[in-house]
Amino acid sequence: MRIDHRADEPVRSGIPEHGRIPRYYAAKIELLELVEELGEGAALPSERELAERCGVSRVTLRQAVTELVLEGRLIRRQGSRTVVAPPKIVQPLALASYTEGVRAQGKEPGRTVITVESRSADPRLAADLGLAPGAEVVHLERVLMADGERVGLESSYLPKQRFPELLGEFDPTGSLYAFLQEKLGVRFGEAEERIETVLATPREALLIGTNPATPMILLHRCSWTPDGEPIERVRSLFRGDRFSLVTRLRD
Image (cartoon, rainbow, N blue to C red; front, side, top):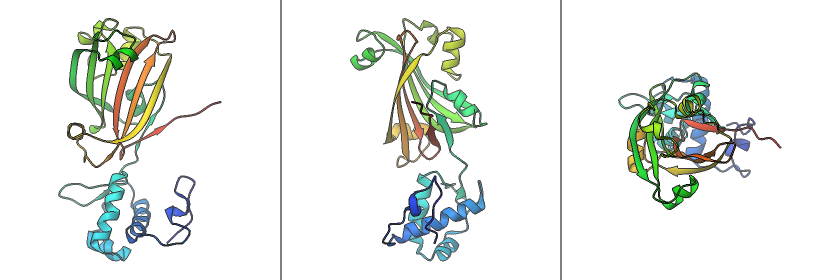
């Protein structure tokens, strides 16, 4: 068993200095080596073969496989064997749209519309958008797609008085940022983003088509124009097994 590591891996592959590790974790390390050998889309050997290869029981092997599924390294396909997952989609933390981020990965973005409505802003939402409590906002809720795969759920809230065109002219299956910038001339100046890890609610898991136990990445964003005028508040929920986030920091 190797105990060295690459710079993007846990030190000593996560093995404590005393060398005593759970049997499932030893099996997981061996499975990761196999995953790298096989490559994307390849099917794993049978559970019996893997258990023999790793020298563990099937119960122990299942625990190792389950962790790799939750981490997005493997995919369980109903009625067939477990396969090696494709690389995660890397979404930049920047003033750019979901569409731009996904296309930069060579994938085709898409959206399934769940909700397009006008609603009254609660006090917290009103404060974020610089509105009086009870003012009308446009709410867009959409399932995010990448190459036809459901990967996230996004809710956007914008002041209705400022953007009345959203309910009549905007195609909610398209890029909201492109519409705001190209059709309405909106300029984004800055944004504040908060990131959390959460579990999806039963409704969210159903819409995204994921296991409720799958870790999710939750982003809250508020955006403003260069003049400090609020544009939107967005709640984006991404599958932790299919997404990673990246940003570049400067002094």
